[in-house]
Length: 218
Ligand code: DX5
Ligand code: ZN
Image (cartoon, rainbow, N blue to C red):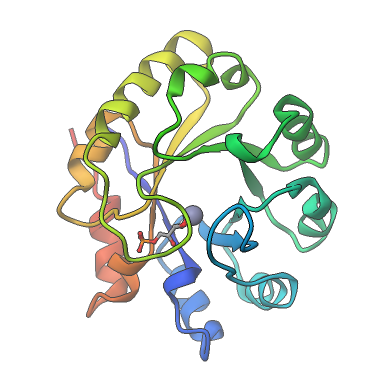
């Protein structure tokens, strides 16, 4: 039995009223998820430093950055200064992933490795030993509001076994298309944290949806 941690993605929030949306998330969610996109690693640009600072000013729960950018290490020190708790970098964007993960940890933040849908979890056998969490993309990164890719559920289960035998304290976060219809399947496969963008912010009652996603399950 466990409570699922829910990390609403600010990408789907109302950028005209970020203060209101951050305060709403503070009141019931577990983590604030920031999607940083550079238009190079992914075919979209999201937001950068001034917006991150506006969000951290109002955040009272942990904030994580999901860096969909090349050369992510350029920003680690700034993000530490802004008070971020965790940073995930993409396996596909980092040539020296072990060094990059250690740079995040040396700054006192939690370090995650994100993988695109096509990236097989077996490639993580070694890095799992030093990562705090693996972020499994369940859509192709770049945009909110896409549908969950069904084959990801099996990958979560296989990753869970790999983690159990290599570093049981490493958590699994699942990101993309998570909603009330598939949350049980995702959590039962092994997810500890779920990102939810459109399913929370497009909901009539976002706080109620967050609480439903967190519900304890068998
Ligand atoms: C996609 C992002 C996700 C996305 C989630 O590139 O990493 O965090 O915003 O949004 P939904 O929940 O709408 O798929
Ligand atoms: Zn994300």
